[in-house]
Image (cartoon, rainbow, N blue to C red; front, side, top):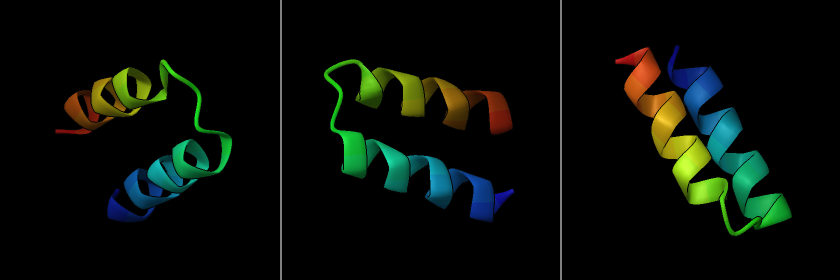
Length: 32
């Protein structure tokens, strides 16, 4: 859902892990 996507991105912004962008992108592709 859109809410989950935004939540995931928010967590990425908070933790700022180097691999985070890849993780978020992967999640987005799974949700598409």
